[in-house]
Image (cartoon, rainbow over all chains, first blue to last red; front, side):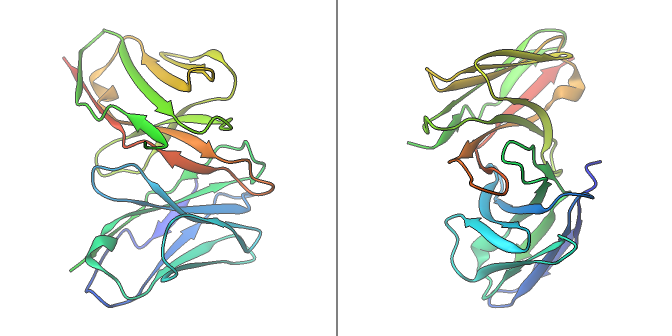
Length: 113
Length: 115
């Protein structure tokens, strides 16, 4: 158990809809990173939030957006869902000290029909 | 060329033998290297981290890093059926001024330990 929680665990949406995924970081961790993992692939970095501000973004379109709250929990929002957005969405929390290890939550499995 | 490359496998090893997993990376400024284990349907779980050239041992696991060759490996001694999983190699991208590493993952190597 890493102390990182995510909700919901599973979600089914249709193309064009919007979705919000949530992550609670481990106690004391101020940095949350979001990753997308398609079936059979390694996780891909979406973006990171450090002390409530976006701190780097991967190669994902603007319809992927996020937020971090004062308690360092975080949300990932995806607008205009596409079939290819079907994946396991992982959040990872860390202390934000550059070499600190990232610990993953259980993930949210999203299916877009 | 992919930033982080792993043989996708499957790699099949008899119980009790040594499993050897390999990973190469392209960014010479990378400083942090991680091995994660991922069981089917679960999230990645950290196995080892390594930052300096050479070997790092933790129980049955040994990580090896060679920055000159841009190569990192994971050895699992006395392999057990419970070691059957996908092993993900991750490397940091760039040098963050603040916040955490942005990790680049390989596609993973699927390992099966045969009883």
